[in-house]
Structures are given as structure tokens and as C-alpha cells.
Length: 276
Length: 135
Image (tube, rainbow over all chains, first blue to last red; front, side, top):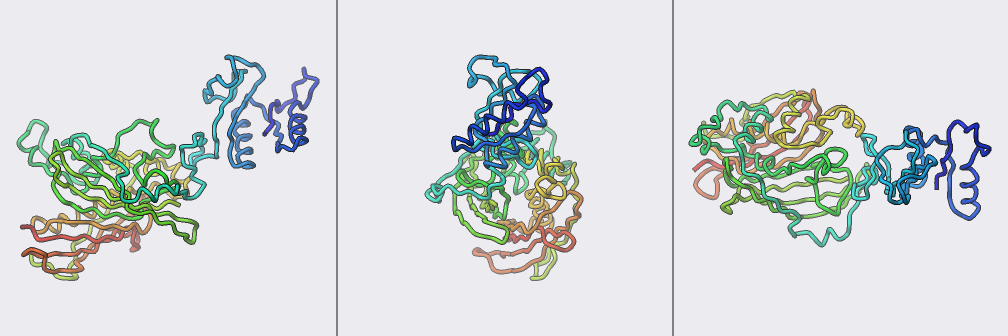
């Protein structure tokens, strides 16, 4: 328990100069662990510092009650967090699992978010899924627009592409070899992206940590045309745990088969992601 | 194209990706990973600058390979190993040379090309491509 229900500047109208201190002393006297920190709970920077202190001491923060003194909005547990710390004197309560901050300084406030500081974590159940399908997805139809963006984005000229009103010429367009990867990227809103902007594209469920791509093998098996729809089926190929010089590493290898709407193979992509 | 020989260069190309080119690839590839466009976050993660997207370097290698192969050879595969990071502002050279020329399973020829993406002569990506003479 971290007791901090105290104005940084003592309230001259109150007789009780340090109301938080007896609370933390009482908890300790009964065998609990508590710390006291003089904090103005209406000052966001001070509240953030208090949360940092709690995470630093106990590793994470499960329940957060930021009480500026006046209860409002019914039961404490029903009050919405709202993401605000100060300004309005009201009870704000969050029951969360704060575990620290991501590299951008934002709080990691959801147990489903991997803790980037925890090192690689492997759920043993993941080994039972080796060889099994770990993801399936169906792409949007390949568009001339998408291919044009890809050519421009990879530094190539898109001037050779036909215009949108030239259907015969469009049917002759063949997408660049690796375009199948871009065509199968899921387009999702910010609410589905992690704090670092990543979506679930690397690795599989059950392995977490800071991820980066170690290597890949792309096999090009068929052409991809405007209007084609890709069906991707990912299988978990292997999970390998190693100890490296800079700590533990986990290698996750997946193989994804891409076929078109006719069932013809377009590509096979083997990818190794390292978690650290 | 004359018949390729082991040791033949497939040429080279150079790129200096910056925040704008990384953004344009991010749009095309639909990646929102901040390390490719948010310099503050990239530094907070311990990188000196924006990271160059791996698939962008893959595309450069295939461009060089395709330009060399023309219509004579088709590209069967590209195997890559990421050897080190590349950052916005780095000048990156893509090179390759023929490593093997051998009979294909059919009548044609199978060629193995070793590719590199280099930064100051040091490998960022080490790759191998397999090609086959077009039927």
C-alpha cells in the first residue's frame, strides 16, 4: 500500500498535518507493507511519480485509488477512471495492473499488453501448437492503387502502371514479388495497436517480449494480379529458447502459405522472430 | 543476357532512406510501428534514429535482382538474415554476385545469387536468392 492522500502543502485549515502517515504506520504494525509519500493528488505529475514509486517498489500496481476527498458518482468501484488525475475534486478509482511504462513513457495498464521490460516469456502450451494453424486471414482484393503505393513506397517508378480507366491494361499488371506481404497486412484502428504502434504481426500468441525479425525465406510460387484475393494460413513451425550474451532469447518460426481465390499457390513465407 | 558465371556481379544500387521515404513505405506496407516514424520513441527504445523497415530492404534487393534477371530468369526464392540495424540517414548499398550456376531439375539452369545490404561496408542484411531460367 502506498499512502499519499495528502496535499504537498499542508492544509492550514486542517488540524491533522499528516493524515496519511498514521495509515501506513498502522498497516506496517499489522504486518503489511506500506510506504508513505507526500503527494498532491490533484497534481498529475506528482501522482505519476507516486505510481512510479509503487511500481518500482512492488513491481506492479493492481488497485489505484486517487481520492481528492469528495466522493461522487456512487460506489467507488463504479466510478470511471477517465484518465484524469487532478483538477476536479472527486473520487477516481482504477483497478488495473500497472506494470511500468513503455519506452514512450505511457503506462502499461492492461495485463494483455506484454511488459517490454520483462524479457521473453513463453507459455508452455505454445509447444503443443507446433505444426498447427496459428492464424488465417483473407485479404481485400489486390488493387491498382495498392500496387502503385507499393512501387512508390519502395522507391520505384509507378509511371508504367495503367490508368484506372484502362481495364485491359490493368489485367496485365503483375504485383511486385513481395507485395503479397503488404496486401495481407491488417488495417486496424489505433485502439487495436499496441502503444508502440505494432499490431500482432510478429510471432504467435503465448510468446511475449520485445520482438524483432531475425530472418525470413520467401518462395515465389505464382503471380499476383489486380482483383486477386489472398488466403493466408500461418502455422507455427518451431519455438527455440536460448541464452545469449545479452540475456534470454526465444526464436519463433512460422510458415505462412498464401493462395489466391482459385486455390493456386502465390507464395510461402517462412519467418523467424526473436523475442528478447 | 550472356550465360551467368560464378562470381558475376549483378550490379549495385544505393539508397539513403529518410523519414519521408520510411513514411511512404509505411503507408504502402501498412505498418504503424512507431520505430519507423517516431524519432522520440525510437530513441527511447535505445536506437539512434528511425529504423529502416526490413521489408523495404527486401524490396530493394528484389528490384536489383529483377533488373539483372530481366526475362531470362525467374526468381524462385529470397532467404534473408538480418545482421544489423539500419537507420534513417544511413547510406545503404545493395549488391550481389552469382554464387552457383547448375543444371535445374528440368532443362534449364538454376542460379544462386548472394546478396548484401551494406552500411559502411558492413552487412545489414545477408541474403541468398535462387533463380531458374525462364521456360
